[in-house]
Length: 638
Image (cartoon, rainbow, N blue to C red):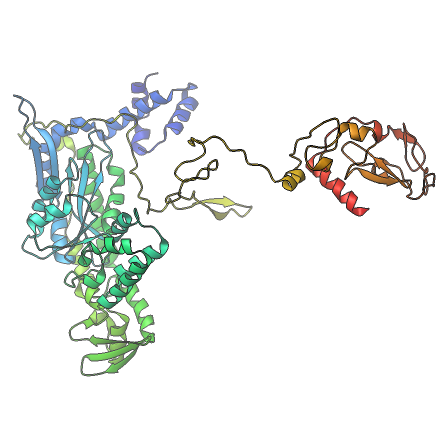
C-alpha cells in the first residue's frame, strides 16, 4: 500500500473535502483495510491527491499565458497583465514575476456605484512558490467591501507597489481625485507619491497605534488616542491630544510626528464621503479569499473570480426584493440617529439655517449646503442628529437629505455588471506565447507556515461553545489569555527580564514561616537526647524518647481519672475515642458505667470487656497536619 495508491483510491474524498484531516484519513484507511499507515505516508497521499484536484503549482505556470487569453475572451474589457523576467541563459524559459487582474465588471461597478475611497493591502501566499497578493478594495452603498483589482507579486516592495498602482490608476482614471487607506507598509506611500504627489491617504488606526504601543503602553493612553482619532472637530482633537501629553509626553511627541490628515477625522477631507479609521474592508477581502491562497496560481485566480461572480449575483438578487430608498445598513443607522435627535432642540434662524442645542452645546445646521458644524454630516453624507432634528422641525423626509452614494439605485449600478464564466482548461486556445517558468523561490527549512504572526493587539480566537447539562445548554469556554506586555520576573533573585529556569544567581532557599509550616505539618523533627523538637521546643512535633517515657506534650494531654496521661500516636487518649468511659476526678474514682481507670496493658469499653492494647503500647507514628489540628481542638476543650 503506497501513497500513490492511497491518493488515487481516496481522490473523490479529497475532492469533496480538501480540509480532511490526516488523523481522520488514517482512521478511515484503518477501518477500510485493517492496516495502519504512517503519518508521512498519509501526508504524501494527501499531497498527491490535492495535486490531481488543483493541479501542480509549478506546472500551472506553463499554462498561464493561455489562461490570461481565456479570461480576456470571456470578460472583454478586463485588464490582465503578465510580467516575466528573461534570464541571460540562452533558450531558457522566461521566469514569472507578476500578474495583475482587474475584471471589467469590477472596474465599471466601482466607477459607477462606489465612493472615491480605496483600501489597499497585501497578504502572503501559502504555496511552495511563495509570493504576495496585493488587492485594492472599495466600499459599496451598503458599506460593504467591493473588490476592484488584485495582483500576484514577488513581495511587498516599492517596485511591486508602484507597478500595481500604475495599472490600477490606468483602469480607474489617474486624473480623478482619490483617497487611499493602508497600513504603514514600507514602500507603499513612496510608490503612491511618485504617481500622485498630492493624493490623500490615510493610515489604519490599529496599525498606527500598534507602532505606538510598542514603546508606550496603557489603556488610558489607548482610549485617549482613540478619542482623538474619532474627533470630528479640531478643538475636540486638541483637547484629547492635551490629555495625551499629560499622560505620557514622550508618546505625545511620537504621535505628533504623524500628519493629522492621515489618522484623525478632524483633518479628513469631505469629498470622499467616508470617515473610515480602520482598513477593515481589505482585511475582509483577505479573509474572503483565505481558502484559495494556498492553491496554484491559476486555480487561485479562478477561485477568486468565481467567488466574485457569485457575490455579484447574490447582491443583485437580494436587493431586488428590497423596497426602501436607502440601503439596509444605512437605513438602520439613520433610524438610530432619529432616536438620538430627540435630545436636540432646533431653533429656526432662516429658511434652511438652524441653531441646534444638544447637551449644552450649539451647532449650526445648513440644510441647503448639507453641512453641520459637528462635521459628521460633512464627512459621511449620512446626516447627524442635529440635522435630523432640524429636518423634523420642517416636517420633511429625512431620507431625502442622505447622500446619493447610499441609495439603492447607486448600489444596483455597482452590481449590475456580470462577471462571465471561464471554460475549463482543456477548452483554452493556444496563445502562442510559450511556457513560463515558476518564480525563483527558496523554500525555508522546516514545515511551511500556514498562519501569519499575530499582532499583539489582535484578539484571541472567539470563545468556544460547548453543550453542558441535561438540556444541552450552550456554555462558552474561556480562551487562553495572552501574556503580551507582561514583564517576566524571576522567583529566585526577584529580578525582571528572566525566569527561574534561566537565572544565573545561586539558588535561594526561603525560610518558611514557622507557625504556617507547623499548621501544615511540614517542619522536620529533630530527635536529640534532650527530647526536644526542632521547632519551638516540641510544640509541633513530639519526640519519641520524651513521649515514651511519659513526658507531656501539647496536643497529646488528656485528663483521665484526674491524671494527665501522655498518649503518642495518631490520636490523643480520649475516652470516647478508645471505647472507654472514664470519669474525671481524683485518682481511683469510678466512671459511670465503667472502670475508674484502665489497666496498663489493656483497655475496657463501657461493659468492662477488653478490646485491645493500650495506646501507650502503640507504635510511634508521626501525626499528619489534620491530626495536629484535631489535637489542638481537644486541648482547647480542656
